Image 1: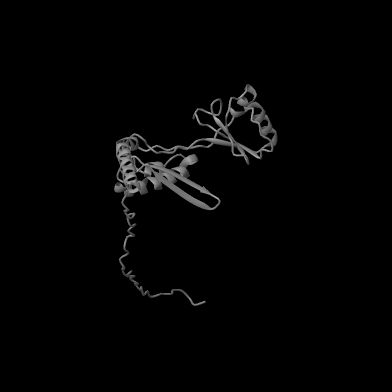
Image 2: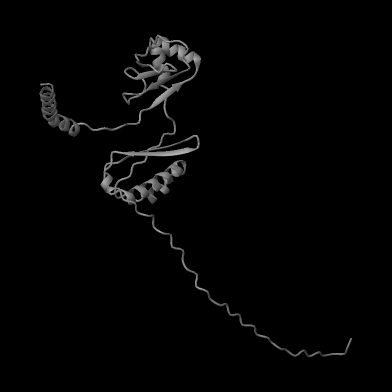
Length: 214
């Protein structure tokens, strides 16, 4: 009797699981896992931390730093999120005019973005204006490598270098379209040896002296 009940329970579980499978596959097809880069500002100044915690009505003390995230992507302000450290708690902020005036002055400064069409040559960015030519050179190298090794789209890349470590993260691409292609070899013109022939011609002249000897 006990074994019969166990068998019935197993079949009931399998039946429910099979009924759930179409829903699970449907959810997978309608869900896209992605990530995005969000602008953030880290505040270390104790006076500013106190000002923001009061304006944002954050009920914490002993905050060593405050990180404010531009979730809406339209500049720091209402509806964005602040996180306290070391507490690690998140708060949706509603700035007063006093704190909003401070946040209005926050910007990356020097932020550069390059955009290349599919038919744009990488060399185009290596001849960018002097103020951004170094950044254009980095983008050109990245563009060459991506076009050689990945033949599809989309693809998303995040490159970061900090504390002596360079890291790159890639996502949102088709692995079947990723194939390594070595860079083209720079062929150095072959020097053909040749002999230099120098003709030396000796001219012999006779000297004739006239007049009384000195």
